[in-house]
Amino acid sequence: MTRLVEEHATDPEVAAHAREIVGGVIEHRSELDAQIAAYAPAIPVSELGKVERTILRSAVWEMLYSAATSSGETIHDAVSLARTYSGDAARRLVNGVLGSVARSSPGGA
Image (cartoon, rainbow, N blue to C red; front, side, top):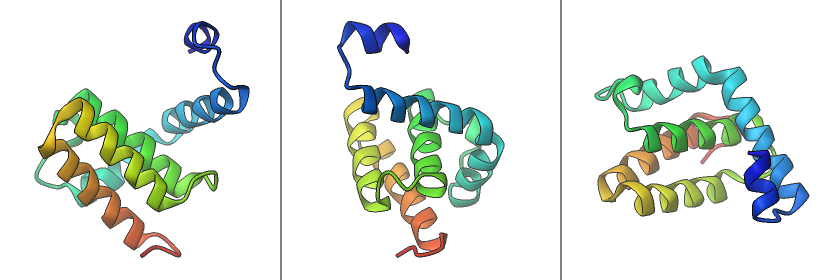
C-alpha cells in the first residue's frame, strides 16, 4: 500500500482511511464474514469471488465500525465497484447484502 500511495501521490487523509479499512478488515474478518454469511446464505463466503469478498468485507467494516462515511455512501461506492470489476450479478449481491446490513444496524434504514 505504501508503494501505491507514493506512486499515485495519494492524499494523506485518503491513505490513512485506506489503512484504517485494511487494518479493520484484518482485525474483524471473522465477524465481517459472519455478517456476510447471514445475509447471503446461499453462497459460502469462501466461495465468493475475491473481488466481491473484498468489497463486502471492506464495506461491512465501514458500515459497522467507521463513522467516516455514511452507510448510503458506502453502499453506493461498493455497488459501483462491484459493477465495474465483477458485473451485474455481483452488483446485485453487494447491494442486497449491504442493504440488509444497513437495515439491521443501529440507526439503519
